[in-house]
Amino acid sequence: MASAVLNSTIADLGSTATLTTVFEEVSKYNVHLNVFERLWVSWYLWMQNDTIATGIMSFVMHEIVYFGRCLPWMIIDAIPYFNKYKLQNTKVPTWKEQFECAALVLFSHCTVELPQIWLFHPLATYFGMEYGVPFPPAWKMAMQITIFFVIEDAWHYWFHRALHYGPLYKAIHKMHHTYSAPFGLAAEYASPIEVMLLGFGIVGSPIVWVSLTGDMHLLTMYLWIILRLFQAIDAHSGYDFPWSLRHILPFWAGADHHDLHHERFIGNYASSFRWWDYFLDTEAGEAASKKRRERKLAEIRAKKAQ
Image (tube, rainbow, N blue to C red; front, side, top):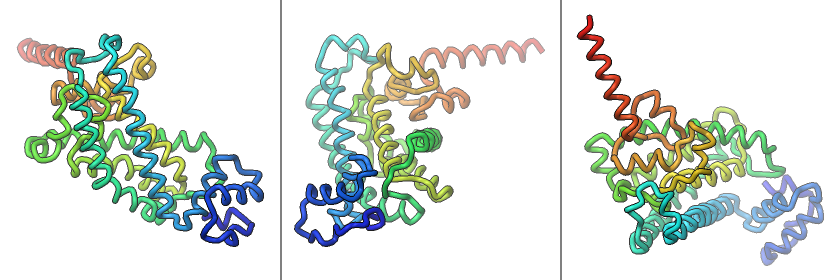
């Protein structure tokens, strides 16, 4: 990848060159690239193995984003002022619960997700994923990420709904419902089978896309993963603020949508959007139940009137 970008003597630096040295050399001959693009190229050149370079970068990125995004919610849980925004405000997770959850999630990341992360690069590049520079334009990445959100939401709805079928729930999904009042760290608190099954919607959607179109960059994949992690963690946060995204985009699921799912153990199966649950009548909560009761009563009255 990098040799196609540089027309320079990077190879002459030798195996003892530091990342800083490689970056300086890249910068000399590639002034048309921005700083982030030069850092990107330097990393792959310095590693000398694209699969390992992507694997390390992907895993580190995932851990920093996941636990970094969870940290503000842990702090908010510890501040009584924010309790008025908590959806189930009588159930605030203890530090012990959060530590135990974090430990199991980290173990899952290292044993279940890490092998999949390592295999991603060769699989995605086989189907046509690019990872060179310059990076694709922002509009293209935004368009593709929007498509990924829609595809993954559909995948998540149907497989999540299936996991609430009796035997599948007990064998696979019950672990995720350990916490009836979820918190950020619990977003990926799940059995290995569930992690792989629902995770396929997140990783598989871009792979299917690039296999069909031949057009996707690794950076697009990273931005998609970051946004999807934010969505999952925020949906499990247990907080609904006046400025939460669902108040701006009415079709956005948000924390109140998924919190009800954990509280009632049924309904609200979609991940990011509300339309699947709305049109297929699987919304959870008192308001949705009232509408269903009223609709059934109306049907009964209509039959009697015939």
